[in-house]
Image (cartoon, rainbow, N blue to C red; front, top):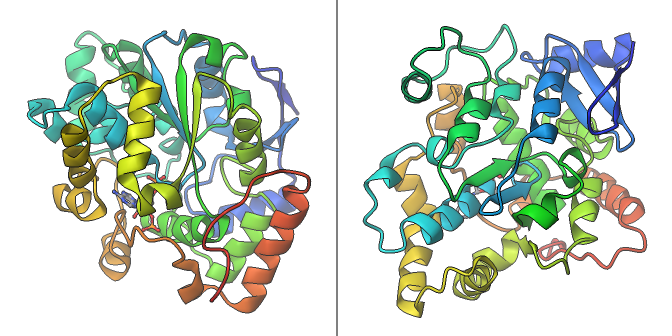
Length: 345
Ligand code: A3P
């Protein structure tokens, strides 16, 4: 039976065969899956209540939302924006705290609802207990922490614009980060093997098929991109590409500085570029809140895996490349949206 969400979407449960395929490929998707109409947004059924809470949440004028499809460099952008706002002199003691706690991931709870999921790290539990000493339950941990986070909040989400209130861009700022879909597919595959919240058991070939059929949470990457691209000239939306940030972080951070109105000197921005480089973030190891498969982390490098553009060429076969390019061609028809590092040469 379908359910109506506050956003107006209809949540339609997956048919038995499709659901069975998901449950085999992802050990953590054991409580049902839905596809939202319109859009085809793909969600784990227990997260529908959270989707309503996120839609109805009161966003604040000082909020900055870091919105990306998974693996587009969300954590990187989150760390940059949080640092520009809160730690421009790089001397903030709270910067050592786990990034998901000081810069909350609003729908993180939706990844923890499976019975299969191991317990959360102590840091999250302590932060929740400290914020809500009188609560006995441990429900909606990250959403609750988002609600009480002090201004200015830097909120992370992988959900698309259309699952937020229509007036979001009239209320607060959104930084949207995009990444070459071939690299996203490779990085997402490794991510889903690494994290218990997906616990993917299939091959890369099967993953490419899920990717091009839009059968991965949170749903169609190309629609996610197009919704934001359509708003790229809105004064409260800043559209960025992973590849540009990687190639010329100084220019990209200067652009962000102008968008956020943080008015940092070039010297400070240069230091933040170094502080948020791949190697610096990997060394600080600000991951660790959500449990991962240690054997996969050892094999692939963990969450901070490679941090490169064009890595897809190493692992993607010509046939897999062809499938992704065909999907991009039809999904981006008529769009003036181009990606770098698309050629094998
Ligand atoms: P790879 O798997 O290709 O290495 P997200 O935060 O959206 O999950 O994105 C994670 C991807 O961004 C991973 O890509 C990760 O290594 C990369 N990443 C994280 N921090 C980065 C940084 N400071 N510079 C470049 N890439 C970074």
